[in-house]
Image (cartoon, rainbow, N blue to C red):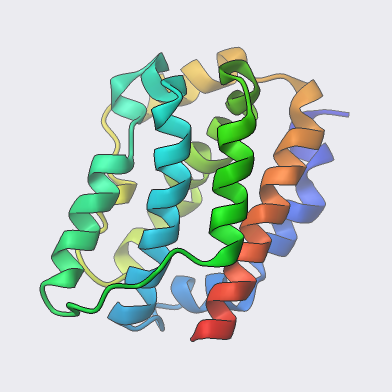
Length: 172
């Protein structure tokens, strides 16, 4: 079974999470989206600090996420903490060796390059997190290292994402 098929159930579950659906419909407040971005920053910081994102500088998201956060914090000066689910995913990512982060690069970065493109027009602010240069090259690069054996690890990542979305919805 291929990677896409082996991860389809949790992928579908993540897409159907209420918080995700509200984001897709453009129903998140600036405050809710800012809280989401703070969780995204946690994930990308943990991956990128391992230098795993060095496979291409165009892949790095952390600076763009921080730009989006700074834009929204001009209107919403409150600081939001990282939630428990994001901290758990971050701790898990930090425990991995660089090569073991590749399934999480596949999961998190490909999500922004594909599904994120639909989200960009629905979220508050400029949505810089979703802006990539050379998308076809980046997709080819990730697909070039992609392995079907990543399925269990990608599914772990999806479960963490589902937990994050669930906790964000609870805080809404």
